[in-house]
Amino acid sequence: MEWLYKKTMKKRIFPSKGMRIPTTPILCTIDFENHRIELSTTDFITTYELWDEDGMFLLASYTTDSEFVGNLSNLTGAYQLRLVGEDHIYMGYLEL
Image (cartoon, rainbow, N blue to C red):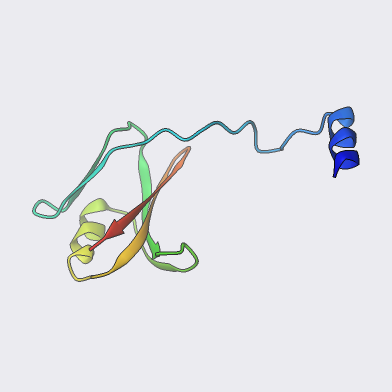
């Protein structure tokens, strides 16, 4: 393990996806009465995804928040929520 570390540092290999920084919490409020999602970010959301709790299987994908929230009212259980933006993917957990 030590040899691999020294070799990597010597060649100055950096990740191709850019530098990673700690995540910043984003406030997400789901309004079931008005079928809306409000976020504390200005990023434009292109896709609203619902995954199983472990994040292994995509259960549903929507392009509008009203359609997404409308279908949440029929569900029970724990899920992973992914909001896909133009530059970021916001992930959180939802228990209904």
